[in-house]
Length: 544
View 1 (cartoon, rainbow, N blue to C red):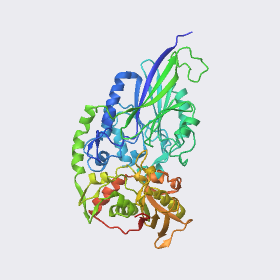
View 2: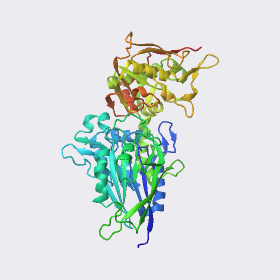
View 3: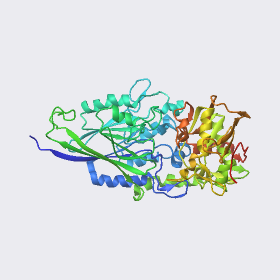
């Protein structure tokens, strides 16, 4: 009878950093408690604690999403990709290919991969010509000094062809992640003799983590729950894509984690293993040569906040030269305004159309080809545009890393969406129109009130919720309930975000994968002058 020996190992993970490195807010032009520099400080501390019993795996979406990422991809590529340089410096063991890695084109991604000292993993993105993994490495195997063998399998959401420009993914085939995991996990257990199998999946959860009920249309964009339920042999599932904060949860015995976005948290999964006294009949207890196998006896996932951590000096030094040039670029004038596009009263801009809102909708319609558009004012401090427009001005107005989708919806869907937006308002006791407390607590949600272009409508707040749309027309004629229309909106709303379930699962006609803020910048740069106008195609009535 052999004596049992126990060891602990830690798996660290980040996801959806989106090129946010410095502890700095580009929209507010001041310090921030986010960013990879702070995360790198955490990783440094964890490495001192765990030594060779630690792996750091990034779970994708690094190359796009911040002004810095945009600047390096489209403005100044004179130096190596600083996001990659930072991952190299932080000792990243492997990175998973995320959907936003393709946004600047395949050659841009391939160049970033060449600069990486770590492998990029994705077992389900295949070469259409050969059927082999397109980026060479579907998985990574790491051995600790005491013989614990850890395998990391990379998977990517297969929904990318629904979003990405065809030329950005030419020659690639995206297979179902669950089907791929069913093939690779047994291979890692048997042929690679892995004691621990970690699946790093750039995707999220399609079901409620507690009840198991679907939380979105089961399109295949997110399959984290299916991976845990249908694939035997997974110890840990690292997730991302949804920008959620998930910790301390097991699904079907699998420890799961998701660390948010932009460097909010470092994810950590601690595994305890034992060796010796293991029954030969166990699938995890076979002997390879004279090496005794290890068995996982417990797992625990947790998120470590980055906000109070000192940024790592060498990361700041790596990014400082590019960051200095970026700041100058942010303040360069992109174009001018003709007319008044400043938002002096955000409340008023939600009750009657403001030129800035009309402009956003008009741009969305023009770049997407859709005849109808909707958008929102995201907070109470949205300034609009002054006389001169810079990239910093765009980011002050459009703060979220959204993309555009064109959906095919019915007239009934549009009416239901307008009724949902109309719930934003209530009548105060003095007869004035106020904001529904449900949109203020537990956090303000002004981004869940949309304003539309391409249709004519009136909302009457004096009427009961669900009966407030008193006019709904297009080109002077009533919109028909069963008729179909193409509408452009941001990806959050198109997925049903904010309670707009009428859009969930609707056919996606087109997707523009570039961040909307970048689209607006490109539009202004091309046009040079933005003209303020409002056709007042909608209004809110019912109060004094």
